[in-house]
Amino acid sequence: MKVSAIIAAAGSSSRFKNGQKLLFDLNGCTVIEKTLSAFQKHPMIDEIVICTSENLIDEIRLLSEKFSKVSKVILGGATRQDSVLNGLKSVSNPDFVAIHDGARPLISQKTITSTINKAIECGHATCAVQVKDTIKKVIEDKIVETPIREQLWQVQTPQVFCYKEILDAHVKWEGHGFTDDTLLIEKTGKSVYIVKGCYENLKITTPEDIDLARALAKK
Image (tube, rainbow, N blue to C red; front, side, top):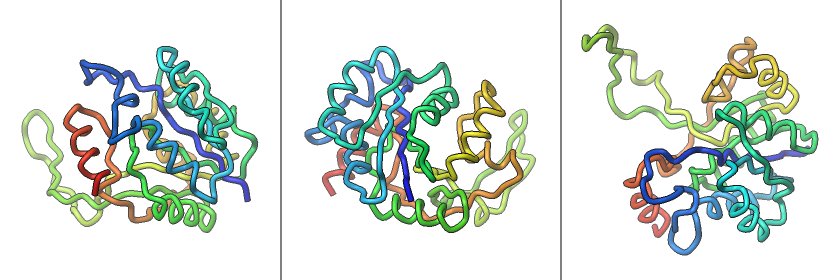
């Protein structure tokens, strides 16, 4: 059973005025190094392909040299979906592929394991956490619906898929700009199953997230 990991690391970091979030220090290493380390040491991961942007590719290639499972560092695309498709075309024909955000450096070994195992069992899986707050659907400043909170989950990564099926879905809907890979499988009529993730598996999006990630990493 071969499992490849695709690390999506081509974001623009538009909310960061003082640099690229993937290169920010996270208690002694960069954000991207912390992410790569989690997949490097996981025994079920056979290879890692990193999809990144043109302005970061040289730096990330240099940083990735210490990770033996990194087989390729490639250019992403104009959108996240384009980047993931490039990654899917670059992995070495695995049975399953784990797609993970480069800006989620606090992913645990336990969550990687449970998500992969659920995908092997059911075909496709993602880690997620239950929504804590009441969510309202609003149109033109007016609440029009209150979904049942117990049925709402906040989807994270990694998302693990049968390789051939997620590749076929990406090729079929190429260029549509989907930001979540599970949606592509849903559009094929197949199911994606949930495993409980961890609230600490945050995606670094704003400068405030860096401070929180540093505190959580220390813990």
